[in-house]
Amino acid sequence: MAESLGNVFETVIESLQAICEQLKGGEGVDKSRSDFCLDNFWLKMRVATKSISNEVTKLCLAFSKPPFPKVKDTHEMLRMLETAYLDLISTFYSLPKNCGLILRKEVNMAVLQVIESLISVVTSLKEKGDRAQKDRLKLTGCVWDACEAIEGLPQNNLQVTCKIVQKEEALVVDALQEIEEEVSTDGTSHRLRDEEEDEEEDNSQTWSNQDRELLFPCMGLVKTARSCLKRIGVVLRTKGKCDTEEQISQLDDLVSKVEEISPAVDDLVSCMYPPMNKDAVRSAVLVLKTKTEELLHIVKQSHYVTDEDNSWIDFLLKAVDHNNNKLQPLFSS
Image (cartoon, rainbow, N blue to C red):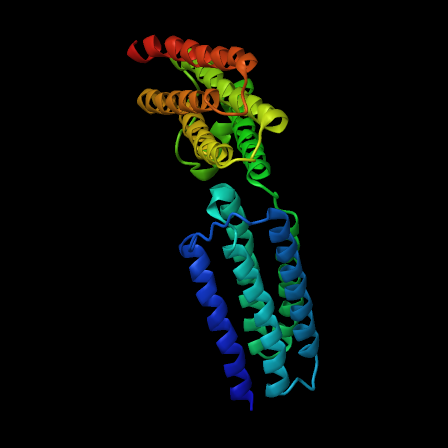
C-alpha cells in the first residue's frame, strides 16, 4: 500500500517536472486571437491559483496526522490538484505574444514559481516522518505566496515595462551611491574590505591624482544613465500606451535596451575602485556610453515621447558626449 501511494505521488511529480521544463524551455505555441480579452485572462489566472491553493491545503491537512488517506482518496485529491494546475498552464499559454513579450516573460516566471513550489510540496507528501511534516507547512506557505504573487503581477505590457524601468533605475542608484560613498571616504572602505579578504596583502593604495581626474567624469556618465532611466519612467507613466501591437512592440524593445544599462554601470563602477585599471575603465566607459546613446535614440522614436521631450533627450545625449569628451584625453595621458 505504501509503495502504491508513493507511485501516485511520483506520477504527479513527474507531470509537474515536465511542465517545469516546458516553462523553462520557451514561450510555447503562439495562440494569437483577435477575440482575446486580457481582463478575462487575469480572471481565469486568479480562479486557477485560488483553486491550486485550496487543493494543496486540503492535501496537506489530510496528511498532517494519521490515519493518512488511502490510495483511492489520495488519487482523487491529486486529480483535483492536477486539474487546477493544468488550468493555470492552459490559461498562461493562451496569452498571445502580441500582448507583449515582456508581459509573457513576467507571467511565465510567476507560473514557474507556482509549479516549482508544487513539486516541493508533493515531494514532501511522498516522504514520511516528523521532519517532512514540519517542512510541509513552510512549503505549503510557499505555494500560497506563489499563487498570491500572480494576483499582484502587472496587468499589461506597459505596467510591466514601468516596473522594470523603476527596478533598473534603483540598481543604478545603488551603484552610484556606493562609489560616491567610496569617494567620500577616499577609498578607505574598499581598502578595508580587501584587507579582510587577504590580511597579508598590502592594499593600502588609494586613488592617484591621475585616477581622480577620471573619477568624476565617470561618475557623471553614471549619473547621466540614471537620469535617462528616471526620465523614461516619468514619460512612460504619463504618456505610455499599450493599445496597439506597435506600441506594445516598442515597449518590448525599450525593455531590451533598459536592461543593458545597470550591468554596464556595474562594470564601470567596479573598475573605478582603487587601484584603478585605466584600460578597463576605458572599455567600460565605451560600453556605457554606447548603451545609453542607443537607449535615448530608441526612446526618441517611440510613441510615449512628444516634441516637448526632445529637449531633455538632446540634453542627456549632450551630457553623455560631455563626460566622454572629458575622459578621452585622460585615457591617452
